[in-house]
Amino acid sequence: MHLVIVSKEDIAGMNIKDWLLTMGDFEEKRLNDFTLYFGGNFHLAEVKKRLIYVDGIDLELKKYVDFDKIIFASRHSSKDERKIFSVHVSGNIGTADYGGKPYSLAKPDPFTMKNYVLALKEKLHRKPEFQFTMEVTHHGPSEISTPSAFYEIGSTEEEWRDEEAAKIVAESIFEAIGDKRNDWHVAVGVGGTHYAPRQTEIILSTTFTFGHNFAKYTFPHLTEDFIRKALEITETNTIIIDEKSTTSSIKKMLQAISESFGTEILKSKQVKREFCIY
Image (cartoon, rainbow, N blue to C red; front, top):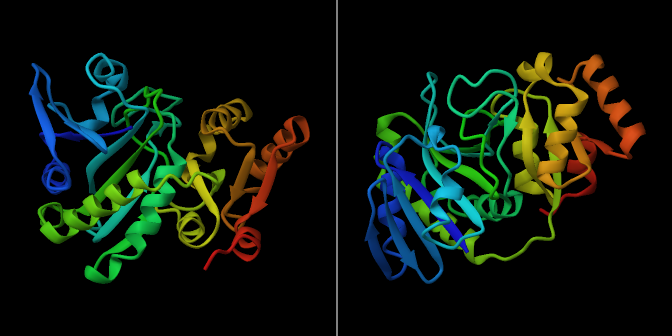
């Protein structure tokens, strides 16, 4: 059972919530710190805090509701004000400037994320001014032990309040929840910019999906132990690299991991060529 979590402080999340509540019958229960909506296909929780600061929320909510996967429905903010739908897993590589803890990673949900992306892809024509993009691992909450990911609308209040954008995200979440396909290949991504263009192409058009992704700007913080931690929590032994942006020192580190643990290192070009589904 999935639990969708939104924040009362998040315009986009509340907008998505309102659409999701039209997709079934729900029993509402108000508690001190959150409101729960119990449904037949999924449950929903509305919390007071910003989502980036809800470390351990899964353990707290499991006292009141049963679930095994989390969908964080949220806004995305950026100075470039691009109109996007985005997905990513939360966590921190170096410092924890926006919630969570340093060098801490949330448990990913790569299968729901993949099924969501494919559902969303079929609806992008309804908002042609929007683009879909993956983002790399960043911001809290990092202390989440239940499989989870963020599903976002960006990047300004205009987009957060857009009813059609919220409806598209809600419909795609609903379809992903109902899609039980879990035979996708899973990888940890290394390289690229914050918006991970190679990983975005791969999740849209191949049999691969992702857990954590580490942009080039995180390379000073990456260590063998941390990459192994990311592989373990993602439950994969495959790394896909953006070969043009991955430095020689990182490639050397990944090769050492491969030799020690049998980790499969794939180049993004190879993946797009050999695992294409469209």
